Length: 305
Image (cartoon, rainbow, N blue to C red):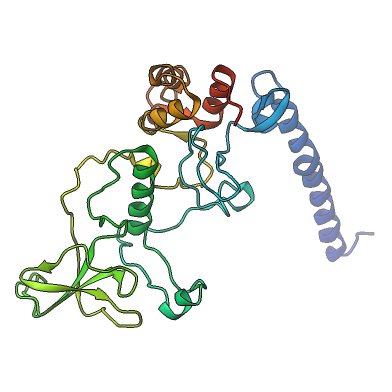
């Protein structure tokens, strides 16, 4: 006597479930785990932890901040690149800002909230202003020129809204009004440029709509190749990058050497000895692992701070 077709289908489904559970739920995970225990892979599989002084201080694969309790950079340590992962380098919240090169106009905060000492949750900085602000701060920290093209001296995006009749190409040859979009009235005293094409530049006012104006970024007189490298002012796609460029490391050498009371040349040599070449010899660019560099720094030039 043959079983009904619906019973045979259910039995076939049960057998498939059992086989797939054994293969994919047990055999495959165990095989991957076994491979991960092989010499050369074991450390990476366990998180590539880095130890110093007999204790675990981080991972070679995940960056971390070297700041005090207030978030200020510790001058005796090399600093990592910015991170948008959670509050910074949070592996459970890995993320990028998702802002692109055309994100150049800020959403200004409510001045009433600022006057009350509160933050405006609706306000936001454009990618350009974030880059400008970071570059200015790093320049001040390192004693270098933190200026960049399309940035104001105060550290925001140098962007104007130009009003007037447009030509067929979209240009405004004879402006009737010009507004500095990222400089807010009551926050700064004067715009980064006094006039544009003979028209006085105004500061932006909270709540005013400038959408009809032509958005014009102003390059300014900053060097085409800034002293502050790009990786120092931009976050990585994952927000967890543990590396910085050799250029950013060398920019920090003078500060670190002064904080530890050692010659700059000695710190420069330490950077060079911790530089990692291109992957497989041709992929990417040379990098420096910040955590490993700081561990080597503590071992070679310890400080009581």
